[in-house]
Length: 521
Image 1 (tube, rainbow, N blue to C red):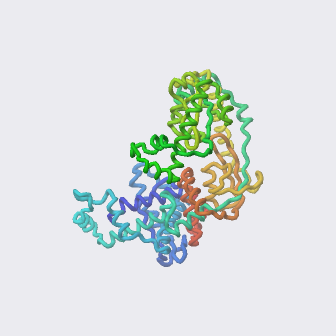
Image 2 (image 1 turned 90 degrees about the vertical axis):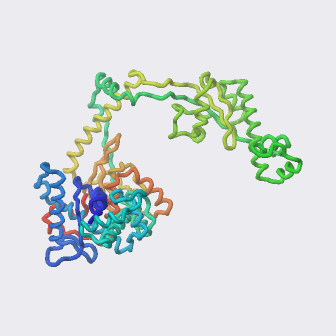
Image 3 (image 1 turned 30 degrees about the horizontal axis):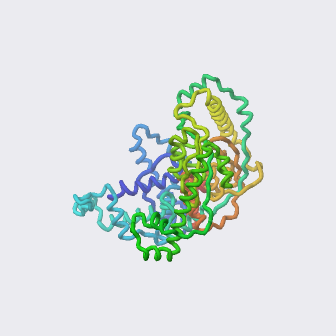
């Protein structure tokens, strides 16, 4: 069909990326009807895929690869049990999306299909950007495709993409989709996690001064620092004192940008409005507090201790502030205007207390006690940092290599540590990738290598744990956090949930496959 080259290929790539398959099969067209006597290789509810359908689809997929790779194509690489089983899983998951669309009555609407076609860059367009229906009719006629078949094909494609939407585009709005995603996020597994001691590996590694300098010279951007400032600061809150607005205060604060010469009647009317009076009190008291603090700090411009003692508040400190700092800041320093006022000007240069900065409910003052000029840090200042970085990197590499070789020979039945429950809502100390693999596995027990930027550990998957009960807000927060997980792992878990829901069965022995048929991981 006309849209196959553009749209089905897009959908196929999405599905294939979910399955950890390093090659992209094109042109899949899977039917799940039982054609007769050929052995059944997969079941999906009342539907099935037989060996004849599989062979036809796999042959077409290999032909697509032959065209794509040319002389680099290796027939033997595709005639393996593992590749055949992977392809069957692709067919099953594609059929699963179709089955879901039909079972849950999730066919895309006419309006959605029209918008989908309008957004397709491969569609012929007129000068106004609308679909050129006459040109489209010619294309369909040349390919012997009826208009209805064209629309039906696009509707199916869009519907299947909508079902897979939770995998990449956000929390589904459809109740069925939300339910399926909730099943995934509520799932829990019981694991044992044992960290590998890095100390022996670090002790066996020595880093030469030449290696330190080589790394420093090649990665100077890592050691180029912005100007930094060490601060001490304090927040002086407003005293909750009674306030009676004066005519002068009303004229000064309440009429800015408005009536500049209020009448006596205007002043009376203003005093009758408690909301306006409260807002005025905030402005007047803030101005008085700021003036008082400025006067007190002027008497002792570098003595923050005396200032906080006078106002009975607490002095806070913060090291390494930059003018563009945005993360891991205390609330008082999150406003860029506040940071700019503290880190610029004569007072910062002279280490004097800043002018009071009115904030919500009080005023803030600060003092720069130390500043570091911007630029490349000298090697002698960062040599220890570089050496530690190189030693850790080398130790992790040795540990990773050793345990990757060792893992297949280890017994998954041997306990490692105290069991704990993990899931997407509570990952504990597992890396994102390791957690994704754990959550997508249903074969127990199993061993994994837990790799982070700073450590190596062994994880033993013991079995399933009782599912969590997540509120709507917890579900939303968990989904938002999934952006940091490998999309393929998320999607695999989602599709495996659909498999369980609809009772998918694979008969891998009919394919002469000698690998686990439960999941294409």
